[in-house]
Amino acid sequence: MGSGVSYPQKSDEAMLDFVRAAYAKVIKKGFEVICRDYQDYLVGWWFSQGRDKSRTGSRCTWFLDYRKGTSAKHASWTEPDAVSVQQNMKQAHAQWTHFQYDFGWFRQELLMVQNDADALYDLMASRRVSEQVGAMEDELEPKVWTAPTDEADAEDNPMGIPFWVQKNKTTGITGGWNGGDPSGFTNGAGGITVASAPGWNNYTGAYTAISNEDLIKILRRAMYKLRFKAPGILGKDIPKERMNTHLLMGLEMQLDLVDVAKNNNDRLGWDLGKGDMETKFYGHGLEIVPYLDNDTDNPIYLIDYNTLFPITLKGDRFRESKPKIDDKNHNCYVVFTDLTYQYVCTNRKRNGVICSV
Image (cartoon, rainbow, N blue to C red; front, top):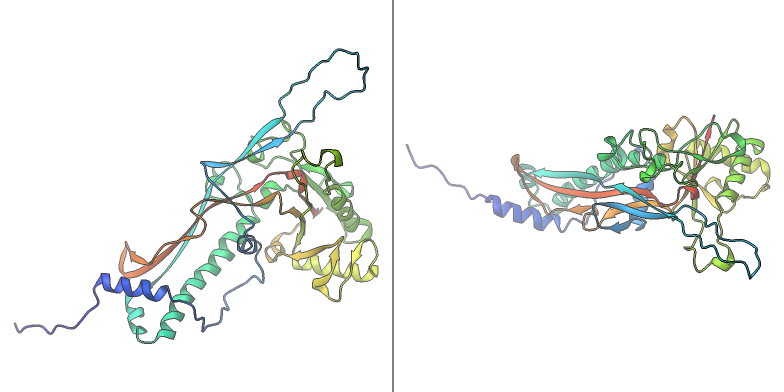
C-alpha cells in the first residue's frame, strides 16, 4: 500500500481552545428571535433585577413570630407581678430545587464558519439564546405559576406562587385570610400548618362578575386588608413593613379592568392614565403575566415582593460552565448552566389571590 496523504488537523485540545476563545467573544447578535411565545416574564424580571436573595445551608429557613403576648393588662401598681413567658416563634423551611439547561455546537459546523467571525459568533449566540428562551418559557415561567402536588413532587419542582398563595372560592365578596395548607402537604406550607400558627394564611376572595359591585369591591377591600402598618410606638422593634404589592393577572383580565376604569371616569380610587398600560388601581399597575391567560379561574394575584421572592444557593446562581467536550459525543462542544433555588414566602398574610367562582 502507498503512503497516505496527511492533512493538517486541529487536535481535540486545539479545537476546544478555539471554541472557548470564540465563545468568550460572543457579542454581536446578527439575528432575530421569533421563537418566543410570551411578551414578558416574571421570573426573568425577578432575577435580572436582583430580587432573589442568596443563602447557604442544606435548606432555606426563616422565623415567624406567630403568637401575641398575653401579659398586658390595666392594674394597680401595687398588684404582684405574674410574669408570662410563652413560646412565640416557629421556624419555617423550604428545600432546594435544582434547574439546568445546556447548549452546544458540533465540531463540523464550527469548522464550516471558522473563517467568518460574524457567522461563527451568530451560530454560537443563537444556540445559546434558543436554549435560554426554551428554559424560560417551558420551565422557569410555568413552574413559578404551579405548585408541587406533594413532598415527593417538591423534590424536583419548585414551590411556586400558587403553593404559597392558595385560592379559596368560598370566601366570596367579603374576602378573608382563608388561603390554607397546600394540598398534599400535611405539615403545611414551609412545614407549618395554619392550625398550629393562626395568621399563616394568605388573603382570598372570589367574584362572579367584573363590576364595581363585585370584583372591584373585593379588590378594594383586599388592598386595604393587606396594608399592614406597625404601631408607631413599636416602629423600631417590628421589622420594617413597606407595602410592595403587585397586581398580577392575565391579558384579558387587564383589558376588562381597563374598561371598568374608563367607564368609572376615574372614580373609586382609580388613577386613569392615557392608555391601557397606564391604568392603575390605588397607585398599583395592572401587570400582565402571559402565563396566567392559561388559568381558567381568571385570577388576580396580589403579591408582596418583599415577602415572596426567589432564594438562590450561594455559588450556584445560573452558573455557566466553560465549553467542554461532550462525554457522550466527541464531536460536540457543550456549555451547562445550573441554578439551585427555591421560591419562599416569609409572610403569607401579606399576599392574596382573587379568583372567579
